[in-house]
Length: 88
Picture 1 (cartoon, rainbow, N blue to C red):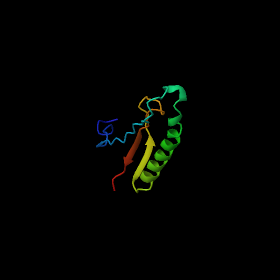
Picture 2 (picture 1 turned 135 degrees about the horizontal axis):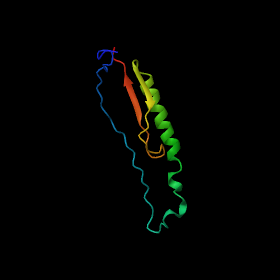
Picture 3 (picture 1 turned 90 degrees about the vertical axis):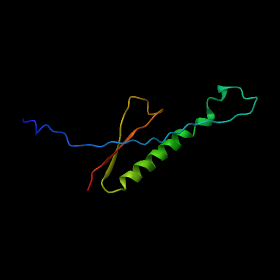
Picture 4 (picture 1 turned 135 degrees about the vertical axis):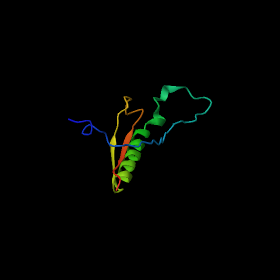
């Protein structure tokens, strides 16, 4: 195989971060984590909806593909989506 056969196509990369930081304000007599983070219970469902919407939005654009990309962190803490464009 010649060097020309091993050549990698040019690729340009960029990134965009959408980060959610969750907080809940409690009254002064709050007893700590005894509630088992009940306030957080509905977020995983919201996160799944947000991810589905992002995937649907990208997938609806001609020439774009989206797939998950694991960076070694738990999907409970972070989800990375790789958006790939095939230039026309």
